[in-house]
Length: 126
Image (tube, rainbow, N blue to C red; front, side, top):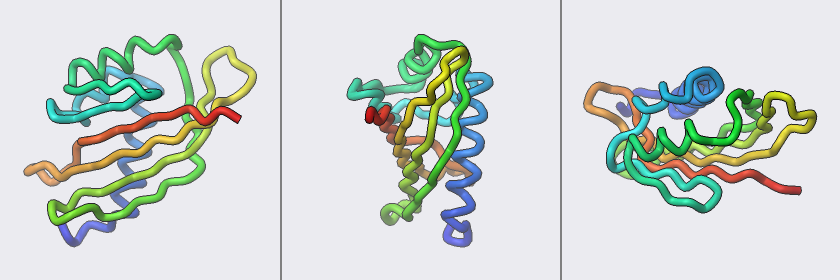
């Protein structure tokens, strides 16, 4: 684990997460575990099924995330990572984009990949 470049891992994770979100939200289930928690606009949701149910029930079918920044830090002795993302969210049929911020706490799996332990999402209103 210590050989992995946190910046490369976080960049690959962010690309995978948002391309999956934009094309097939149900596919995000594999990135979460039962202990995972999502805070979406202040609402706390725990567990894979509940998180995927929330993400798939959002009131828009199609969207496109445009990432502006990705910052990451190693987190703790368990080789976790904090990933902070900011960008714009374009909803289908909407003229204006919405600014968003999202923080992920990634934890390693025994298989050598990562899962999302914590996920906090906020729209940034001007």
